[in-house]
Amino acid sequence: MEKIAVVGAGLVGSLQAILLAQKGYQVSVFERRPDLRKATLVGGKSINLALSDRGWKALEIAGIAEDIRKIAIPMYNRCMHALDGTLTYQPYGVNNEAIYSVSRGGLNQKLMNLADNYPNIEYFFDRKCLDVNLKSNTLSFLNDQTNQKEEVQVDRIFATDGAYSAVRMRMQKSMTFDYSQKYLDHGYKELVIPANADGSHKLDKNCLHIWPRGEFMMIALANLDGSFTCTLFFPMEGETSFETLKSRQQVAAFFDLTFPDAVEMMPTLLEDYFENPTSSLIMVRCEPWNYQDKIVLLGDAAHAIVPFYGQGMNCGFEDCTVFNEMYDESKGDWNGLLNRFSDQRVPDANAILDLALDNYVEMRDKTADPEFLLQKKIEGKFSRLHPEKWTPLYSQVTFSNTRYSDALKNGRKQDALMQQILKLENIHEKWDEPFVMDKMLELIS
Ligand code: FAD
Image: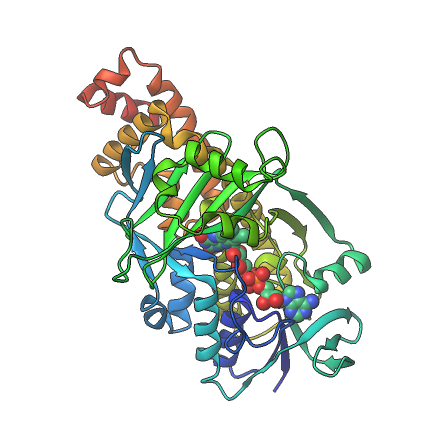
């Protein structure tokens, strides 16, 4: 049987290892870090993620969705925190759908534990991939335990080593390979709202909390232990930025003024702010994702996107689904498979990158905008009346398996139509009247 290497034991690598093991392959997973399950959590790295339909589909295919449900908290609404403390709730779906808060570390550990059930998966920790010889399919690693270099030759390589992929780096240098990267001018920092003394949550745990503040925002997602992980998305440089908030006084004054209702619940704000790292957000597009029938990039290694649609991991898990389906269709014949996979996925990854960028503006700015809220109400009503004619873009991305590239096209069309509706006279007062729905129908047809 062929030997397969998975480089990177993150979320996508661990899931893909399970799927490959289920096909009977001997899978070796090489991970730069020590075993996550034995290491202590480093402060500021307790990210939690929103898991949604595309992610669940891949987990179901692997037969492990029920295991993951046990560590996931459903979030049915966005809860917007205005400056004066007013809360506004917006359902995520039109049919009570939810996205799910999961701890990245917790999910990663669970996937590794599930992978341990397969005798044909072997993990090698403390192995930093340095390079790959494309001709001989030989990976070189630095073994952090022995400080020695090691070489491993395999039949195929799945590179899931994240946004700064070492395997991708070699492909960039050695073949016809298009690559671009861009940093967002905003970065992020993690903060915490601890649990109440009795272990309960201080905010509604079934919401994704957002403090939209125009140029920037803070969000909070619930953890199982009663705490919330907050993420401040904020300019890296400029007048109000990570660069200018330097002293404890400046940070305290800024939070008091900008997030007054949250500050009351953040007793360790200043320690967290200065101890936790400020991280940047990189976007990566590249093509093709494969080298012949031997090497393929999946997950962030192929498509690092900004986190504002909550789709980075979901898209990576969808890579696994699509690969799995194409593999099954080809009945295990690898000939041309990775080419076809790359051709299919690249446009979808590029589309979700564009959608995620658009959504940053929506989350930090438009969620507090009356015009945007009106648009959501009209769209919600129309899609409830005519579900076959209108699925909101958010639902197409989050609660369906529609190709991202199709969702992007549909969303652009919907937006153009909605702009015409918003121009109707007195639309703010009359949005609920039947003629608005009639006009939507007319425009759609
Ligand atoms: P990674 O998780 O980066 O894993 C890569 C693995 O490879 C790591 O274990 C790393 O140690 C290892 N590695 C790296 N280099 C080497 C090497 N040279 N040799 C060996 N091993 C190596 N996504 C969502 O779907 N929903 C969300 O709500 C969401 N929120 C996010 C919030 C923030 C603030 C950020 C930054 C991201 C968010 N994402 C979200 C994106 C999500 O975290 C990533 O898309 C996901 O972690 C990608 O998984 P991966 O396995 O491809 O890469």
